[in-house]
Image 1 (cartoon, rainbow, N blue to C red):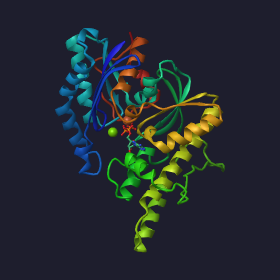
Image 2 (tube, rainbow, N blue to C red; image 1 turned 135 degrees about the horizontal axis):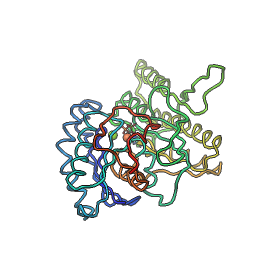
Image 3 (tube, rainbow, N blue to C red; image 1 turned 180 degrees about the horizontal axis):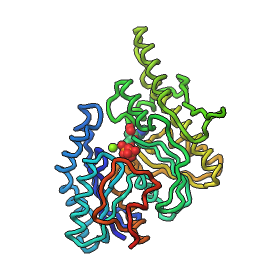
Image 4 (tube, rainbow, N blue to C red; image 1 turned 60 degrees about the vertical axis):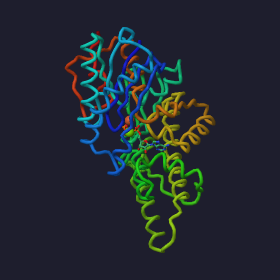
Length: 347
Ligand code: ATP
Ligand code: MG
Ligand code: FE
């Protein structure tokens, strides 16, 4: 099916046209420069920016794909989780277009979008597989049983992986968003320069949780390191700290994902979310998976962070199964992946 999809859950106004797993067009209007002056995303500013950009992005997506409405089989938008005001802009636009053009409408769970981003370069993979979801707000290991059927096996107890990158970047005065900046700087640093804590999650009966992660201790360790150099009047070795931090995160995520895949006998690990773009994670996970005879898939770089192509691909999967949302569907700031099927009526 060919779907026009809209994504406005945070600070990207994105519209794409996707034919199953093939991207016909993908427009991403980033608000990063607007939010940079505040050091992070300001919700009210995000909503207003979406409103100002959305119509032009829709027109561009149609123009780039060289398609008219006749060829579109469904219209989708991210409806949860995310910033309520931001989500509302995309969802309202999608519903309006669905009514005007008399097309099926689908609300999409943002994280399901990240899970299926690897489909955009993999024409044949299908569940079951393990999803390592590493984004700005989430760090989860998800058992993907089927489209719409998920079990979360591991998660972070505090900061998400992307959030940790952003916070550490702020400590190193690198600006927002931090992930890409740390990744770039790490190339010129020594990853073995500093030994940083991996952040294990203790179990009540002793030992450690095999799949859960924790990044707040790591962030505090970096903070202490920076303060130590500053106190001694020495220059902070930012590249070495960035490289050591990235190495620690990559090793921690790799260890947990591999353990989980082996325990559940899942042969494929599909990575998704902004941190899937990280070169350290790509290198480590790829190498370790290879040793263990597991396949690891990463989305194309441009579909790691928020985009509408992944939302369109997810909507295509649902539409093929006859899943359609009622026009009364509303946005939700939080929604568990186990509740994805609540978004659809089987039509
Ligand atoms: P969520 O999907 O959980 O709601 P989000 O949509 O804000 O959160 P994404 O757009 O998937 O998150 O990812 C953004 C995050 O990815 C930011 O925290 C950013 O720093 C991080 N990131 C982007 N590129 C890289 C990179 N190369 N290395 C590490 N982190 C990165
Ligand atoms: Mg974003
Ligand atoms: Fe996201």
